[in-house]
Length: 364
Image 1 (cartoon, one colour):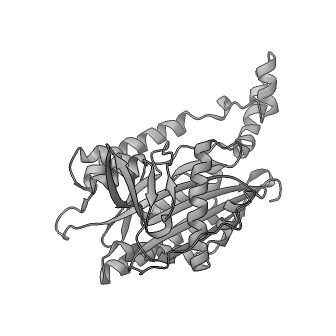
Image 2 (cartoon, helix red, strand yellow; image 1 turned 60 degrees about the horizontal axis):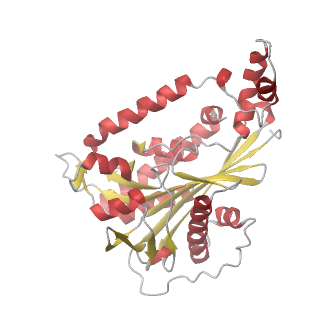
Image 3 (tube, rainbow, N blue to C red; image 1 turned 90 degrees about the horizontal axis):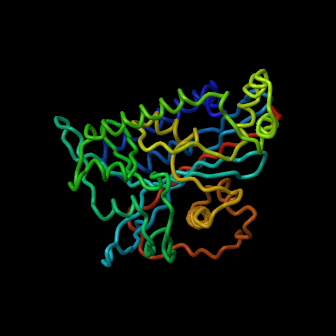
């Protein structure tokens, strides 16, 4: 279904328009005040103006893609954490990117990526160079237990899983209006102990991931898709000998049953430019995933974190109502008491981009 979704003309047009709008916003920010927070705000505003898109897939399935965004002015999201017995204090992120998958009205899974924006400090005659703080890098790469004391995480003590390697990332902003997203773990390996890097140093890692993803796609044939729990043909194949002509029936049913599985693909670790960022985000291929069905304790911890952060921003801005409702659904948390930090407001804050893809079976 993902391939069919990506080929949909409605989706392709939506992706192109939203990437172009984001780019214009970043270009305008770089032309006036080249500040990370200004650029994040421009990205958030571009997404907020994007309309929903709907369409049909095979077998009468229909889909809808909705986006929301919010930018909360306030203290930076400062957290404290310990590594090697030493306490550190750093900002967690400038931007939280969420992608939620809803099937027949029920939340199935959600992906999350905390992004720290970095503006290029290079002149127009040299390669874009970005300074990276080693302790912030350690926070975004491994997510040790941390306690928030300012901003949206104030009062929360959390330890989050980063199995995908993409719960924490850097958003590298470069003139005139480009945005490259790279996993903190990839940045750590590229740095090799240094405290700055250029975008060209990321090329080997980007090419390596691109090649691996192409190989995975090329080797993923419908004939060898197998899931006896959901597919009757697979169940028969698992229990009995079978005639080879059954493989044709199996292949014809594979795309339908695969679409219904709560098994999102692995997250990308790099997004080269805004177009690829938008495609990965709307394609449910960006960030750490948690499952609503049969969740693990680490799934529940991530859900709880996102639920509280989204609720705080929703209460303060009046936005994010769609994703806020989905996160609270079935958890009895609609009445969470979440006080918004009312202290002195710094000219900073946290931006949120939320995309919800809803699929309705047999209703196209």
